[in-house]
Length: 243
Image (cartoon, rainbow, N blue to C red; front, side, top):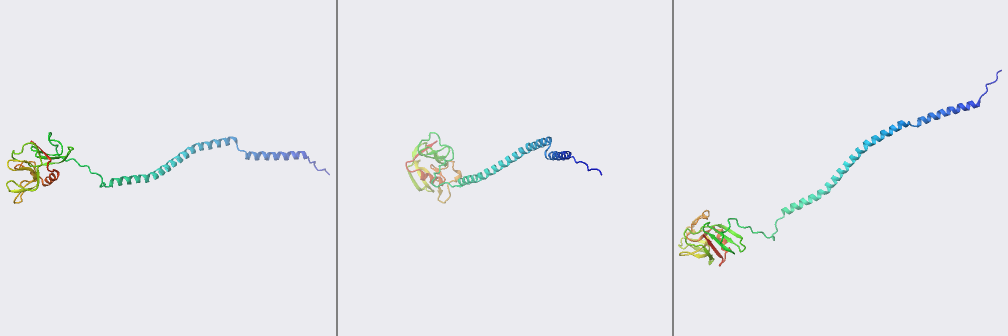
């Protein structure tokens, strides 16, 4: 009978060790990444980061700016509305009754040069116009009149001598109102008054004819102007007549 083969324990141990070593190397290869591949991946990730990061940053900045702008507009809206309301209220605010109203200068040509000074009445025969002038030389009122068609009033300085609310013409053919005397003609007083009315109620001239010399010596005025002068000129008021 043949004897069984001899087992060499040393070889078996070596074989087992070799197998274990091979398995370990394989496992390590599977687990450990390729350095080149890892480097490539790192570079790719960095490139993506460099590309994406500025875009995200810019978008974020725009969003922040839009939010800030909206917030500013929201805050400014009430202030703008309040300002507009205040301006509208100020514009619509009526003038106070206590506020003084500036007196406007009368429209019309200036009085003739050399026609006196101080508070006075000026009557210019060439222009057939009257000026009521205050002490500060401002013209309070000026308007057309109808003076004498005769040469019975000389240029010079006069003054108001008397006033009569209603008066009768020298020939008793008519009447007038607001008579303010300042001179004497050939046979009757001369003064400022309204347009005379005949006894039959017809005016001796129209208001449109004022500016033409049509009277017998006095100075005819529109009724509203006659009343104004009556109230404006007390006795003693200077009257300057220019040619």
